Image (cartoon, rainbow, N blue to C red; front, side):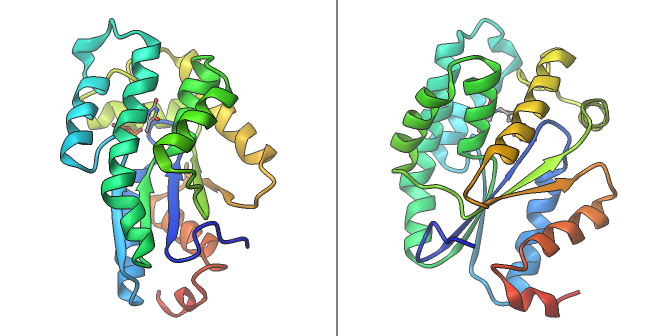
Length: 218
Ligand code: TYD
């Protein structure tokens, strides 16, 4: 496996709604900590004081009238801040950085589904992240109806989750295409329709290449 970040390691969790990224990132963090890794777990949009305020604006159901261009730039603004404040310094310090969403969310949601195009979003992502690409990207893939049912059970739908089923179908398809078309080997597709424990085990398995010592922890 090619390592993109020579000092630390950047692992992103990606996917549509209800794939369980938030639960799994906590479990992965705890297991990596248990084998002695210095781990930082973050979410996008958010993770810093500035980025959490941007999150509030970009995801609030109150802002149904937000222009797509505004949405594109707000996600990038939140990203620029978290990379400068936390991600890049943590990688430079040799840490393992786990992220609940990052640049690929913008490629899928804004680039492909909203239609801004891959090229523009890649350029913006490169500015926001100072050209940082994850070492590993775990795609938690779940059928749309299963994912939306999980989100509905959790309550509190945000502005993105309120989009129609068609939108979410496109999101799922775009992620699968992105993973399929990638030649870097960083994408791992995980069947997230399974139980939380099974998904946790599949994620652990998928990180074996970079954490061989992971084998020793149950
Ligand atoms: P969040 O509540 O964090 O949802 P999830 O648990 O699905 O991650 O909401 C984040 C939403 O923002 C989600 O619908 C995806 C969307 N998003 C984008 O459209 N572009 C982006 O660049 C990012 C980071 C998120």
